[in-house]
Length: 318
Image 1 (spheres, rainbow, N blue to C red):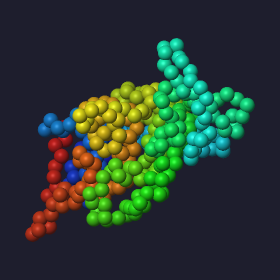
Image 2 (image 1 turned 135 degrees about the horizontal axis):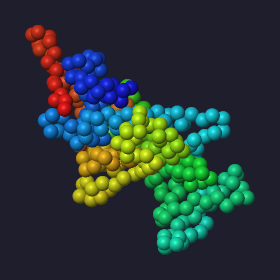
Image 3 (image 1 turned 30 degrees about the vertical axis):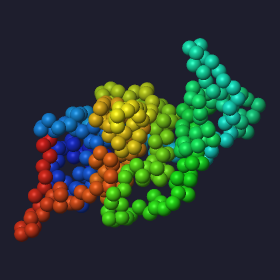
Image 4 (image 1 turned 60 degrees about the horizontal axis):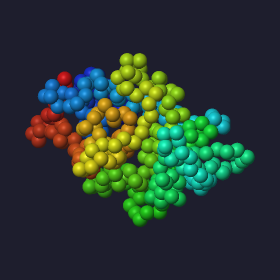
């Protein structure tokens, strides 16, 4: 719904004065959130990075991708697009393999009953992989590495963060007024939100997103503009805070959008953080630290005390 509204506003270049009165605060926040996370649309006053046309194209793509993931998680009989595991203790390190280029891979055998009598391995060039080895890992997805099946593992550490950490729990924020969430950061909510982690990991699952990728936009031209055909949604890195680090969390995804907005569609956490910000729409999250700030209706369409007329801000559409 949020993207539907934003797409319509951009297509029609509608001013806040003409937005639905009960929606304009949320619409304004979501427009700013999109700009900070996916790249600012260009306006006449030379603000912004991406054309209105490109912004609409990206919104259409993101909307369709969210729908594809939602539909893909609905299984039909035993035909699961993504298998979700609550641990990976069935992965047992067995040996190393040296590739022709000299890369060393650690080989983990899948010891589950369904692979009994078979040699099914997951290989990785990293020194550590499993939940037991990466003790603060929350989740990971293996795309078509085990029997051509996408599998998502949720580690015990994640369950602790979601269920066992000291309050406030994420559910405590649901439906709270602005005063109850003011000053919170989107990152703090992220680490307590099971749905956010699952969405992030689902974006790595090629069985969910790869085979329907050609249907994720309204036209071939739109697909060419998104430049994401047959490409994974990964975890990108970006230079910010004086070093190169993963484009995770509010600061990371905003840094990526500022530096190269043409890459944001390839970064899984950009989608996940945007979805989280839209869900908790009592706040304006579009600031450098992703803090819950206020954007009251009076800020956008202030009311004259005498005449009671609203004098809304105007957007200098290009």
